[in-house]
Every structure is written in structure tokens, then in C-alpha cells.
Image (cartoon, rainbow, N blue to C red; front, side):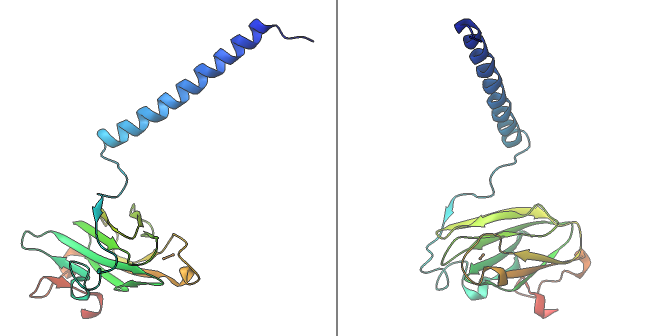
Length: 180
Ligand code: CUA
């Protein structure tokens, strides 16, 4: 049975409208999430030199882990490297706005903190920054979720969330898991 050219054109037009409508809905949803709810990709496009990461700047060994600055801002810094996190555990208080900052000296890694909204890629050359509030206390598993080599499945860390009253940074404003 022959289909008339007019019927084909009508069908094409219908599908064009469906596709245009679908794309419009998706674009509006993305703009709405970004502009109204401030849900954006977890990166602030800050660069860092992967070659000198461990030698100079904020990701040297003595700066890793959690620290609280004079203004009360709580920041945890971690280096993701094949195939471990440095430090292996970070200590943070519950129900407080905290900032997590990550960098990689080698390849692309990624992290998520189980049961929370924390999830980001860690790309060499960039600082990955995430803000969050942890509502549950306990040891939360933080695995690497980006395949980074043979040891990938062995690469994980712990986020230790303690009640606010138990979060006691030392004199220099630092709080470490093993210092407890
Ligand atoms: Cu690091 Cu997978």
C-alpha cells in the first residue's frame, strides 16, 4: 500500500514537534535547576599544577585533612592518587556546612560519599570542590568511582562524621581521624 507524500510530511512534522518539545523540556529543566536551585556541576574551575601538588600550596602533606579557619569555615583537603587517598580518613562535624577539596597528581579519579549527595570527578590540573552538610554521623565509605588503573577497586577512604559537640579541632585549627 502506497503512503501519500502528504502523510509522510505530516508524520515528519509530528515527530519534529515531539523532539523539539522534549529538548525544550530538558533545557528548561537544566536552566531551572541551575538558576533557581543552584544545582550545578561540582567544580569551580580552579587550576592546580599536578607536578608540584605535594611540594607547594594547599595540598602539601601538612595541609591535608580537615581544618577550620579563623572565620569558622571548615574545609577538608584530600589528594586522590593511584591507588589511595591521602589522608585515608577525614573527620567532619554533622549538621555544619563543610567544604571538601580534592586534587589528583596522576590520573582522573572520582569520589562519592555513600548515602550523601557528594559526588565529583577529580581531574589532574583542577581542584574539585564540593559543599555539603552531613546529617548522619558515623563512618561513611568514600570509594573511587572512576576507573583509574589496576588498583582502582582498592582505592577508598572514610569520611568520619561526628556530632558537632565531639568535633574539636586542635590549637592550629586541624582535626584528624587518628587524633581522636
Ligand atoms: Cu582512583 Cu579509581
